[in-house]
Length: 180
Image (spheres, rainbow, N blue to C red):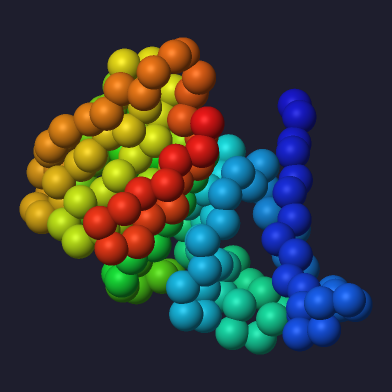
C-alpha cells in the first residue's frame, strides 16, 4: 500500500520580504487546488473519500480538518472555487463538475453534478453561470447555468484555436481570463 501525504501551510506575509510560517496541517492524498472563504480553506484532493477537504483556519497556528465531501466514484478532485455557500469542484472523471453546499462546513452535501467534455481544470462563477476551462480541444471554455444547482445545464462553449488545453481561469464583471 502507498500513502501520499500533502501539507496545508499557512504563512503570514504581512511583511513580504520575510514571510513567516504560522501553521500547517498534514492532509491525506495530494492537494491540487485551494480556495479560501471566511474561516475555511477548501482543498481539491486526490483522496477517493475526500475529493473536497474542508479545513478550519480560524486559528491559523492550529488548522483543523473540519469536514470533507465524498463525490461518487474514485476520481480525484482537481480544482475548487467558492461562491457564497457553494463549492464548485471539478474532477478527473464522472461526474466531473460537482456543486457542493458548504453552508455547514462540517457536513457538506451534494447540490448537483454533471459531466462536461474533457477534463475540467478550473472554474469561476459570475452570476448564475460557472465558467469552466478544460482539456476539451473543441470546448476549452464551457459555460454552465447553475440557476438550479440540482440540475446544472451546459449553456454554451468556446472553441479556442489550436490544440492547447485551457488550464486556468479568473473572471470579473462580464469578462473571463483564460490561461493555456
